[in-house]
Length: 389
Length: 251
Image (cartoon, rainbow over all chains, first blue to last red; front, side, top):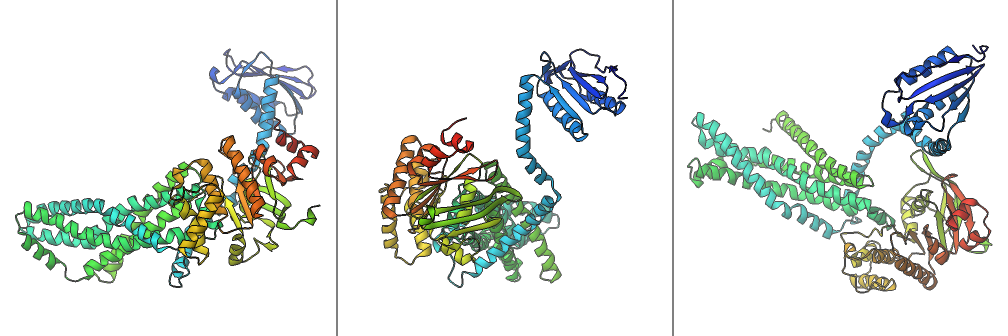
C-alpha cells in the first residue's frame, strides 16, 4: 500500500454543508482534509465521518505519518475540536507522526486543552479506580459505626464529670425539641385519635360493639401510634433542624474552630442534642397518648353519644397492665436516639456547599423515618416472640 | 541567618494529600518566634491545606510539624491538644459560633480550659475585645456585626487563651481596602505589643508587604515550596518567574 505513490482516495459526504473528510495518500503519508461545515449548528451525524475514517485506516495500514489539514476558510467550532482531540489521541497511541496544519485559533484552543488535560488527568484516574470504589464502600459503612462508637465514649464521659457538654445547652435543646414541639404534637395526635375513632366506630357498629372504640383508640395510641407519630414529627422537625444546624456550622468552619480550641463537637454539640431527644420524646409520647385518647373521646361523646365517664371507664379497662404504656415508651426512647444520632451524623458529615447541606437535611429526615419504621417493626416482632403482647 | 532566631514552628518534608490526590510535597520551612510569616501563592496552591495541617485539622501523609520543638502529628491525642492550646486560629470567614454572642464566643474556650470564675472570664473577654476595638459589642451576635468586625472578633477569640502563635487564614478576604488596612495595623500592633508569632495565609499583596517579616511561596504546578525569604527580598532578588509574577501582579 505504501508503494502506491500519488494514489488519491476521496471520502466525503454527499450533502454540502455537513461535516466531511477527504483523504490523500502519498507513499506512507496521509493528508486528511476537513471539509464541509464542522459547526454544531450544521447538525448531521458524525457517524459517516467516523466510518470513513475507520475504513480508510483499515484499508491503508502501512501509513505512519498523517497531516491533519484544516483550511482557514472552513467553518468550525468546538465540534471539530472535540473530534480532533479524540482522533489525535487514537493516532498517538497507534504511533503515528502527526503534523497539524491548523488555523491559529484552532492551535490556541488545542494548547489550552492540553494544559488543562494534564492537571485533570490525575483526578479522573483516581475517580475511576477500583480501590477508590472499595474505599468509598468501606467509608460508608465504617463512618456511621465510628460515629456511634465516639458517641458511646462521649456518653461514658458524663459520669466521670470530664465531659465538655454544658448543662445549659442540654436544657436549651430540651426546650427546643420538647416544649416547642407541643403545638404540632397536639394537633397531629388529636387528629390521629379522632380519625381512629371514626374509622373504628363504623366497623365496630356492624357488630354492635361501638363502645370498644375506646379500647381501640387507647390501645392503638399507647402501643403504637403515639410513639410512631411523635417519632415522625420529631424526625421532620428536630432531626432536620439538627442536620441543618450542624451542617451550617461545618460550612462556616465553626466545627474546625471548636476543634482548634480542643472542644470536641461530639460532646459539645451532639451529646446535648441526642440526650435531649432521648428525654423529651418519651414525655411527648405520654402527652400524645393522652391527647389522642381525648380525640377519640370527642368522637365518642359528640358522635356516638357515650357519656364522658362511660368512655373513660372503657378506656381504663382496655389497659390491662402498665406494660402497654411502657412498651410504647421503650420504643420512643429508641426513636429519640435514632432521630438525634441520624440528624447529628448527617449534619457533621454534610458536604461543604449549600446543595450538599440541603441533601444532608433531606437524607436525615428520610433515614430517620425509615429507621423508625424498621425499629417499630422489630419491636413488634420481638414483643410477639417474647409473648409480651 | 535564620538559625540565629528561635523557631516557633519547624516543618520538615511535609506531604499533604486529600485521599490519593497530592496537594503538597516535600515542604520544609521554619517560622521564627515573634515574627509574622506569610504563606503565599496562587489560588489552589495548598495554602489553606498547609495551614490546616499546622493547626491539627489535617493529618499529613508524611513529614513533621514541630511546634516549639514538639512533634504535633507524632504526639498522643492529649499531648497534641496541649500543644494546640499554644495556638490561636482566625478562620477565613471568622467562624464565630453563630448561636453565641461575641462575649460568649470569647468566653467558651476559657470556660472549657480554665477554672476561672465567670466574672474573671468576662473581664478577660472584654479586655481582648478592647484590644481589637470592639468594646461595646459584647452582646451582639455574629450576624449583627459587619464582616470587618467579625474578623476582629475572630482575632480576639484566637488570642483568648494567650497563645504564643496565632494563625490567620486570609484575614483581609472580603474586606474593603480601609478595613483591610486597619486589620494589618492591628496585626502589627499585636505582634509588637504582645510578642506573638503570626502565621498568615494571604494573597493580598498590600498585606503581604505591610505585615510580613518572612514568607514562603507555594507553587500549584510543582506542588511544593519554591521560595522563601522576606517578601521585600523576594521581590528584589528572587529570580523565579512564578514568584515575580505574583509579587508584581503580572499576568
